[in-house]
Amino acid sequence: ITGAFTHRDTVWSSSIAGMFKTYNTSSIGIDGLVPLYYHSFSYFIFGSISGLLDINTVTFANICVPIIIIPIFFLAFLFCVKEVGEYYSEKLDIQRIDENNIKFWILFSIFFTLPLPYQILGHVGLGRERYTYLISHSYLFALLLTFILFSIIFSFLNLNKKGEIVSTYNKIFFVCTIVLFYLSITLSKISFLYVLGSIYGYVFLRLKFYKNIYHMLVMLGFIIVVAIDYLLLINTETFLKNPSQRVSEDISPLAYIFYTFPSLIYICLKMYSLNL
Image (tube, rainbow, N blue to C red; front, side, top):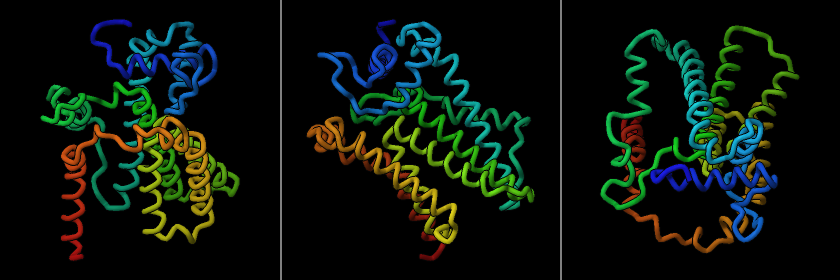
């Protein structure tokens, strides 16, 4: 271990990445190569890169991830903001984000770093572990891929708005790209299966995308991804077949309300504004 302050997620992910690097299998290496169905894709990528660089996975997690992966994460986020901003600035007739304005970078820094110690950003007063997405490599990599996915989607939409002719072949390739990204994201962080799936499911029904053949293909691809994740990850000893996962005493009602309260407030205010 590289130090007394090493987070257990770093050790955990380094172990799995090391097993991918050495044995090409998802396991922590204790008591043999016992299969572990847990966010495998991100650990496979990290193990592969550490093998390419010829360094051990603990060194990669503590030194190379902050140098290589995290800057790419921020770059992907900035590309995502740029493409989304370009799309909605024209659609809603609002002023575009000015990347040269110092206010943008101040808000950017506050959004990601926050002028508060991260120790107080966990379950405040609930005695739970303090946690950030930059510590969790699976969470970090899934977010990185999600930002890239949204960048690609809105870049495609911006291209269509400019009157560019997109061939049928390119549209099918675009559909396959979205589905493959969704699969990669969910294999990196299984919770994104629900988050991204719910978002697209809502948009699919709300905007009546079921009338479009390409959106139907995307939805079919998403359903196939859900089936794959269920068979390979969810319906295994790591999740559904693990009693500790199905009945967990770690999640308290107060913690659940703490995380969902802002969303509930927004939903109530939105419904009120629409007179629903």
